Amino acid sequence: QVQLVESGGGLVQPGGSLRLSCAASGSIFSINAMGWYRQAPGNQRDAVAVITTSGSTSYADSVKGRFTISRDNAKNTVYLQMNSLKPDDTAVYYCHAAITPNWGSYQYNYWGQGTQVTVSS
Image 1 (tube, rainbow, N blue to C red):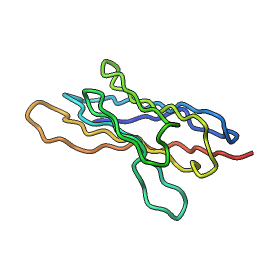
Image 2 (tube, rainbow, N blue to C red; image 1 turned 120 degrees about the vertical axis):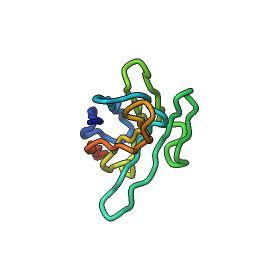
Image 3 (cartoon, one colour; image 1 turned 90 degrees about the vertical axis):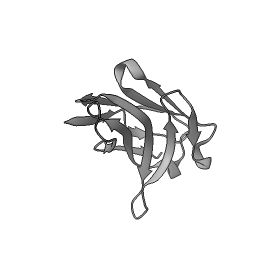
């Protein structure tokens, strides 16, 4: 079984920073893209940032210049550094990874349990 475990969420004032982490564990042959998504109450889950195995990144327009995604392939971990946070960034943040569990198997999408980020004064 594959698990994604997130950490780092919490309450922060506008303009503050948070760093999210997500570690993949279990039966893992290879990990392709990893990323962060977020869902605010009443909204759909939207992509925030994605990073490929080679380190290519893409960001939602709303977070460009403020958020930075990175990964440590040796630790099967992806990070999201969030700076200059705004109240509109308040949401549950979910980690995603495209993982091949065993050699020769299909690639599957896995999700973390979600971590709450609240930006408020």
